[in-house]
Length: 114
Image (cartoon, rainbow, N blue to C red):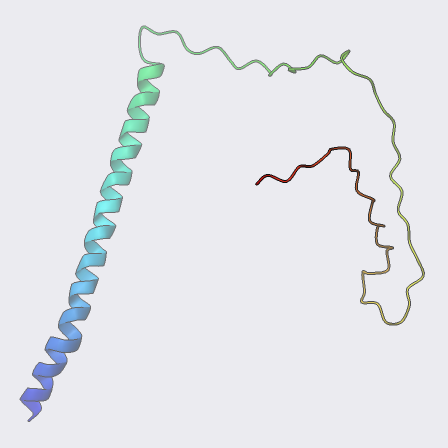
């Protein structure tokens, strides 16, 4: 009876766990190998770009602005906050007044498409 229980545990518990562990280990080795190859390629590319017989790349100059400073005009603005007295039934942080909804602008004539 003990041998039967041992065989059942071995085939239905230990063997599947061993297979899962082996598959995880293979994937780990594969990923490590790919990472080492990618690092080797990256190093080879870096050496090839500045290898013997080639001039080293010029140091990067600061990027220039796409829009000149004299284009446009400066607008001064001031940020304003509106606070109200909190009433007892508002949650904390809701003491600021909610903005009023704006009226919708209707400047287009709509036609129903059939």
